[in-house]
Image (tube, rainbow, N blue to C red; front, top):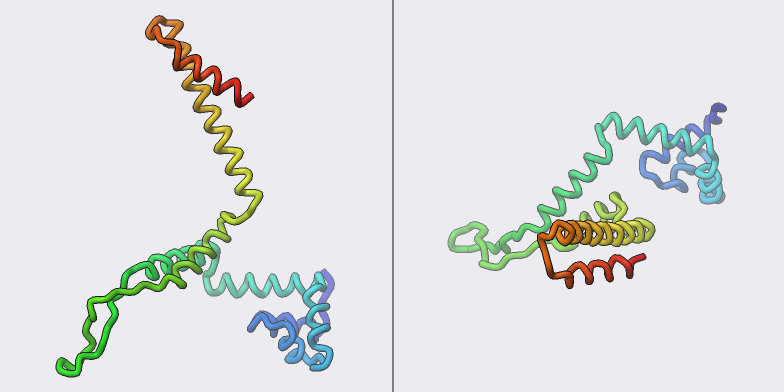
Length: 177
């Protein structure tokens, strides 16, 4: 990979500090008037974006951060936010905080953490929803076919005389085709 200019390298280093591209451009020595446009161009530059990715990966590795760590933290936050916490008030006679008998939980924290987990595992991807529905339909059809074969086997072996269930299963299997 070709080497970055000194300003591009400075921009990459500044950008990973706060992820504010315009301010990173200014701190890297670009004009304040053109910093926003320069920042946009720098982020679109393949070499600069590769360097930024490399710097982020190094930082994550140094801090021992990965997707597992993030998901674990989000789960902990969601679980903690769902716990009912007693509402406390100051008791002037006792000179300490005492519970009021009411409880609250942090629904915003729980909802946000759960949403981020869902996004990470792709729960809100429309393509995934379609794939899951198709798998569910295929699974239901397979279950019906298995049940059909089991009932047919019982009928052939003479274990069952009533064919109404078998007839219904044949109808269901034929509908899916």
